[in-house]
Length: 615
Ligand code: SF4
Image (spheres, rainbow, N blue to C red):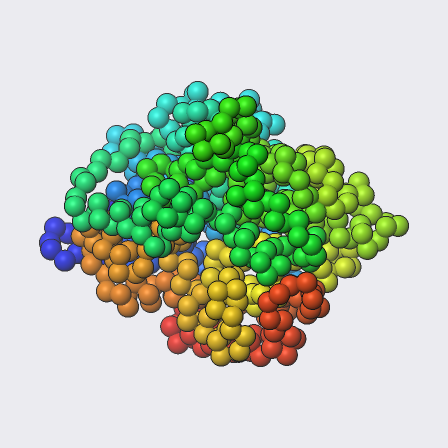
């Protein structure tokens, strides 16, 4: 991005951004500077992504003409801590209407790939077409801007995600990488393949510590273009280290917004997403057995209990002081001064979602098998949420239909069987399971315990605690912030939940525009300050809020235009069967949800009309 004016008090429209349109198989690329026409263009990320996708209708996300849009936010690559986000957008093989039409969405990830993409001079990369053979798309800084080249990727075929990244790192100096795993290579039967991003630490340590653009199946979309990897090779940004920026960074690293994601030795951090286990298990709301909790086994997986036996060390993305990663390693046999095991060989990065979705929610209640499942899922290139949920669906199906099982008769708790099945899915040998929970359950005619909304598998929060799920536009917890409200606020009335979705929840997509990691937890005033210090543009609070609202509503409008109706804004049927083991109010009845849907959709539809977002 660059300013087009040299005055005090720059406006968003005083900036332009550079879009690089690339056609496959040739790799011919056209880089254009485009004026920022509004706050969305200026903020970037999904602000621009959904404006681009709005007029495009796709019937097959694997059609060569279906675009994949890779872009950054205004703060990506800036000096603002956690300004690292890169976004992959397009039409998803997984997110679909009730009558099977693909829907637009995105997936976001951190560490240095986004920074390096920005370093090439490209703010946005639009890729269409298909390569004739397995290929690598290389974007590098050349002359005064980005240049694109298509390189042979034959030697990457079949490699795991970390092996691909490390091989490319040996080939491309000072670069970062977005790769698919074996799952994405077999895209036609792998709708939940994700995209792994290299990290600064994994390149240094040569260990499998990737970040993920996991949700929505964009690894499959990239695979359908025969692109196994994208290389971003550009110079690092130069930073000025202004005092005001240091203050914002201090707030990000040690302020209340990021407290949950830090470790206790970092200004009283709460320990990361893993810490969700304790308060949720207090009320028996940690998902188990395909979202039907029924015993105390999750307590065995509390971090404080695990740490007695297994070394857990926090680590971070590029220049991030929050350090939300929790690296789990084999015990070396030695002890630290406070009696904890010292780390040996690295095994897996443990976050709440992969831990739960591949562990307790599949009835895997042992530690070592859970670490192995997390690591295998990453190496094969799956989204861990979708992968865990489709496997728990298979297990539940087999429990209910012992006479006609699927997935090799997989049963709850069979970690070895899960690994075997994951390998078969990644190899394209399980076409029904590999298409995700929604399509699998519809084919089997047994959708009642399929835990998905609009085809996207639910994250690790019970649907009976979150009636906001159907309005998440890119997966249950990262695009509609209603998932812990019942636990935290305990409200069950309709007015509260309408307001929670319409007036608050949707604003969580702000950081899917500005380039910051959501875990920075900054309030709008600090984001405005960060943008002002980085670009000279002083946004008004309402301007920012309205741009975020318009962006969410554009995504919703695309859903409606594609045919989403009351059959799409639904919860899994099992939501309406109260589970007496769960110690939270049971309030989501069919009548409650029908009333909620009428009011939320009514409000959103009205806003789409008022703001003329479809015209
Ligand atoms: S909070 Fe975590 S995911 Fe976000 S930038 Fe920092 S280390 Fe990366």
